[in-house]
Image 1 (cartoon, rainbow, N blue to C red):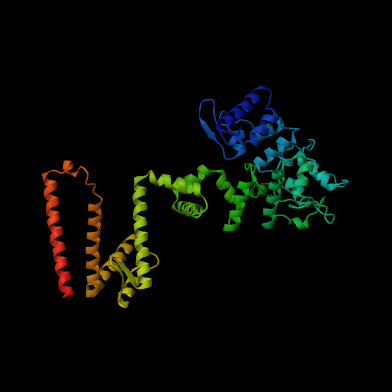
Image 2 (tube, helix red, strand yellow):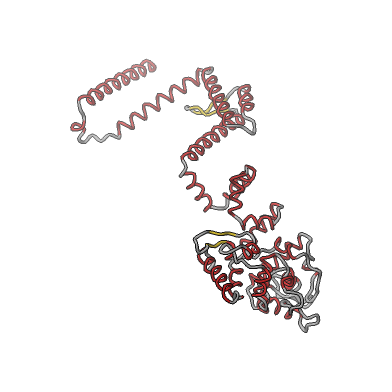
Length: 431
């Protein structure tokens, strides 16, 4: 189900069952499996969210179940699968939920099993949803990933262990990698120090959520977070908690500049490899006039800064007629105008300085001045000729009025005069 409407149906079903003869363990299990308790809608249409399972259980109805944790445990008594997932949601060891004197719902593996791998696999399959260090240990001491096992240590592959446990490889892999992260942190022994059937003293139950979280439904998301946490040198548990509460993350970004800056940098770092995010951000910017203006201004500033740096590095600048070499003193002055970190005002000043120095260099060289004038003249003539040549002469007589005729006649006279002047200059140069 795992939707807002589905959550509402499950939570209301559990509440109704409590009003009658007690909640069905199967319903409680589904609420835990799908984490329906995190977000749902009351019969009055009020949206409710909980960060902790215990607050959901004890909150007055309809915002919660309105019962105590012992009451809910009593309803699920005898169902180790439901109790195990409940313990994971509460951050405690499953055995801590069983009242003193009751029959243990989570028996330990036999000390002297004929085949310790089979024994542990059987218990893992039965309690695969219970979570916690006990189940991590069952995997860690029996599994060697990517291998079919060996006679030397009797360990088996993830696929083999999953087959014996009667569950998916992904589920076994999640427990394996949770133990792996805990071992890297020095919380538990490494895999090489564990063998089938060995028992160790396990860490405090609440620490398990630092390395394994019940809300993760697939290994890819978890592994991506774990990989990035390792690369950044940050806490995997902190990263998971942030990912688990996006609304709280949004609040922190809106309220705190440092958090917003960290989020901005993270988005920038992700843009290179996430085309979908590129498209979404581009659409958001395009829909905001003030953002479009800011992007255009920043693009202009970047182009100008790059232009100034190239001039300072090469000692040359582009002008309409080609390229001009600037005096060494001018190049040094340009380099001083644009330090590594600059503001928009710094870039504008530096760009204007470069333009002024280029103008001075052109004025100081008559040959360059002539080249510039010749380039401007040629550009005007060629552009005008192309415009005139593009005119379709068919039907022109029907389109032109008196004013247009006068303009064309005046243009013809100017062209004739220009042609005559050039022809006269040509004859003089030939003579």
